[in-house]
Image (cartoon, rainbow, N blue to C red; front, side):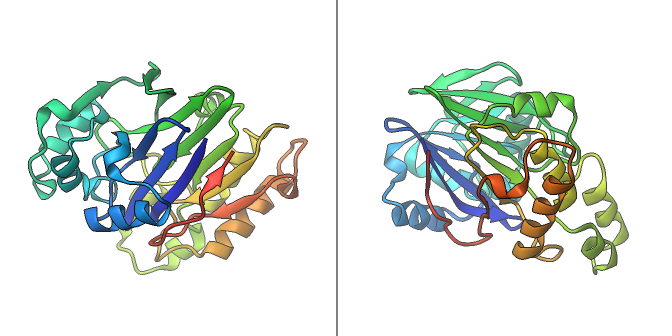
Length: 265
């Protein structure tokens, strides 16, 4: 399998994931032009896309969905709550209803040769979802936009090869920053976003001997830095009561507004 972050941050999210035979997109939260350009940089094209998996209806995850769906007619996979919320979102324009494929949490389905498991997450959206993708013995998780995690999440992320995990904010930067109080409380709440510290703690609970790489994603532009997220997550792993340390496997940070390196595994 291979994956590439086309964009990952509070201003827009778009993740490419593929096997040798099946190409998928997770979210379409940047402009259609940027998505097309990003795919072009890694030698791919929307004409070869088998489906778009949507995590939830917030604009940084669907802003380009309308134009791409109308232009290419790609099937859109989303929960019922997310689909209904998208159809109420005027900014994305009209999306042909026949493109939607309704999915349910904890009920896996297949697209080409990739098996997809939708995972329920805690976020202030209609019916938000994270995804685990498997093809043969390979597996990839994409887990962003969650305010907390629990045993259910830890269980669903076991035995992955690669995990793209949210490290949205530094708590202190957020607390002393310029965001209004209500927004700070939203981000810090159970239906907000994972801090760097929580990201590291979650990661420490899903490591195993076969784990290959962690990618930190969905970083806030105002309340985080790449180096800060990286170092904080590493520190939390080293402080955890587990058999692994941060130096046992690669950690990288997905770029907010640029195409990141393609990861093959």
